[in-house]
Image (cartoon, rainbow, N blue to C red; front, side):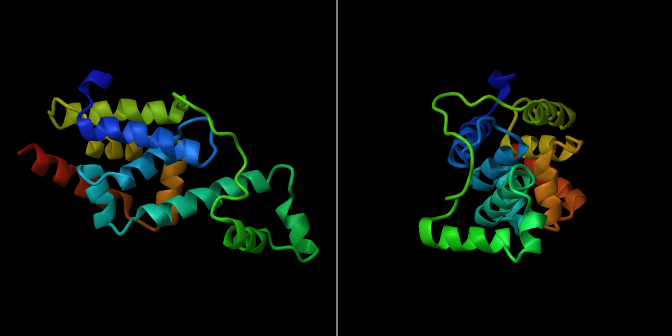
Length: 185
């Protein structure tokens, strides 16, 4: 399948791995693909996200908050701490103001290839189907965004981030398709 990826789509895969490493995650998920697409300056995927007001730094902050919420429901009980006056969000803001963004992120950085989650693999598979549906030979970053938007299920955290950003998913889909057709012409 990767032989059908255009240069912009290949770059998205590489950047998604970099984003996973930077966040201390040991697997590439749909959110890392979303961040990589937001960083894409040459393809329809990044153009469509920007056209809908979605910027890399805001999306990255939303992903960090989502990861923090997942971690907080583990060994640290946020509600229990709140009951005694400790606000985990305020603690995080204070620590990051002092020590830098992501100072509390849990995880380890890996070198080399970072494996993809089943959800991320599904997004990539659906990107190929999107290209085929549009009768285009190569998979571009826009097809990857369409694949991400088509992948359903609770494990597609990228869709959760997009919904939290209050973006109209149908309009984003339409914009992406329009840009893909314009880039192909």
